[in-house]
Length: 178
Image 1: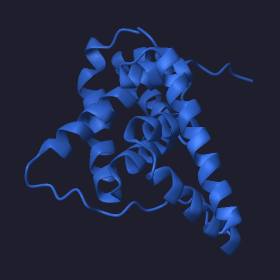
Image 2: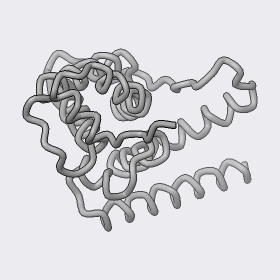
Image 3: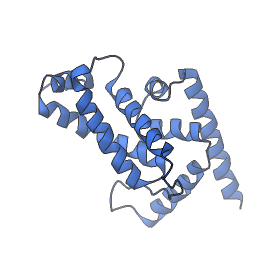
Image 4: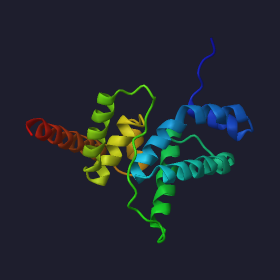
């Protein structure tokens, strides 16, 4: 049974020209990156475009890649920056609706309803709290990785997550009493 290589090892192999290493990185991280971008942008078409641009940026930067920190943080930071660039464009209409990223077609009506309620509650969070929550719970990043992506201390990330969870609990308690 082969030992699974780290993301950094794969990126270094890709830097040396091994396409299969890139394919494995893409397999590992494309879904998490897309989820983050979809939640962050609120528009699936933006998430598609920015995800492609992010992977293209990884491709172009491969020869300069040096394993410093985690590859996943590096990837998400590129995606976050590309999305910020897109959102700054003056001709972009920023009022698109956020669509849920569904894992499978077998989602029951109750699960869909719960997902919609959660999605609506998350949408009401302040942007910094929403971003930290999405990076951790939907994209699987650690506190330290989130800190690198958002350029904030780990303690600040922890606070954002704590406040986000508190607000979500309060939101659902209010809905239960209604």
